[in-house]
Length: 475
Image (cartoon, rainbow, N blue to C red; front, side, top):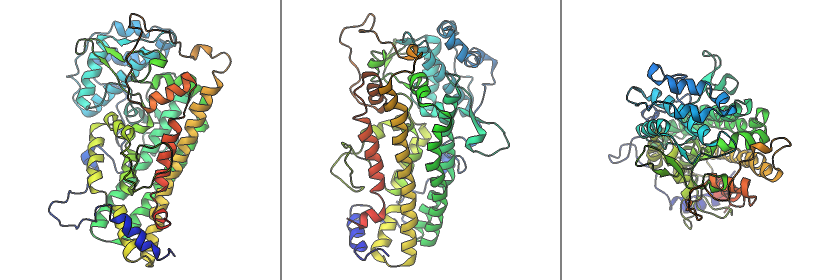
C-alpha cells in the first residue's frame, strides 16, 4: 500500500496543474479524433494504407527512374549528372496526399544522395530540377524540404506480405541510399515502433474520454491496453543490433541523414543553396532524427512528462525553474503538419496525470486507486526503458564509432572536409542554434564529443522516470 503521505504529495503537485475538466463544460475542447489528423488506431502516425511505391503519372518518370537506380548512380558517381539533366517538373499533377508524400520521399532521397553521395566532395547546392519541385511539394505538405524522419520512416515502407501483419518481420523499406540491409533495418525498426504505438495512442485517447466520465475502471482498463503496446515498443528498439552494424551505420549511412544546419564540420559550410528558389536562397535545416517522431511527444503529453532545458541533472516532472526544452519544440517543425496539429490539440486535452493525482490525493488506500497508480507507473516505466535503450544505441552507434575511427579499408567513407569553403569568405556564418544533428556531428567529426548530447538524452530519460506517481509520493 502507498503511505498516507501520498495525499499530501499528490495534492501539492495537483495545485500546479489544471483540474480535471467536467464532461459537459461548454468551453472544453473535444477529445482529439485520430482520423482527423491522418493518424491510424492500428498503425499510429504511419499511414494504414501502404505508401505508394511509384507515382502513377508517366510525367514523373524521370524521378522514378532515378530512384530505381539510386544505389548504382551513387556508386558510379553518375547521380549528379543524371539529376542535372532532369526537366523541371510541376507538382500540379500530384492530386492526392499519398502522391505528394511519395514525391517528397523520392525527392528527399535523391537530394541527400546528390549532396553527400560521392563521399569525396560535398555539393553546396542542389540544381533547379531538384530544388524547385522539392520545395513546392514540401510547401504543399507543410514540411521542410530536407530529409526527415517522415521521409525515412513514416512514408518509406511496404509489407512483404500484403495480407500479413504490421510487424517488424513483415516490413521492408521502399528505398535506401546505401543499398545495405543495415540501412533497411535501421529505418524499418523505427517504422515498426511507430506502428506498435498506434493501438496505444487509441487506448490513451479512450482513457481521456473515461477520465471525463470519471470512470476509474475504464481508465485502468485502457492503461492496461496501452501498457501492452508500450512494453512491445520498449523491446523493439534493442532489436536494432540484430541487423544494423554500428560501423556500417556510422561510416556509410549516417552522413546521408545530415541536414544543412550546423554542418560546417562535415563540409557543408553555409547552409544549402536551393537553385531557382527565391533567388537561389540558402537554407538551414536540421537533418533526419528520431526526435522528429510524434510518438514520444504524444506519450509525454498523455502521461504528463515535461522536458526542460537542463545540464543533464535530473529534473522534477513538475519543476518550473527551467524553460521548456527548445530543441524538442523545434523538432515539431519537421513533423507532418497534421501530426503537429494533433500534438497541439492533445496538449490542451490530456488529463490522465491530474486525474491519477486527484484520485491519489482523495482516496490513496482504495484498491481501485492502487491499481490505477500501478498501471500508470508501469506505462511510464516502459517509456523510461525505451529512453534507456536510446542512450545505448547512441553510445554504440555514434560515440563509440567516432572514437574508434573507420574500420580498415573504409578510409574513403570518412567525410573529407576542406579547410575553407570554395569561393566563400574565410569566416563562415553557421547557424547558431544547436541541434542534435549538429551536436552529433561535432562528436563524430571533431572528437569533442557527446558532452552535450548525452546529458540531453539522459535528462529526457530522468524526467520520464520522475513522472511516476510513486516518484511524487516519495518526495
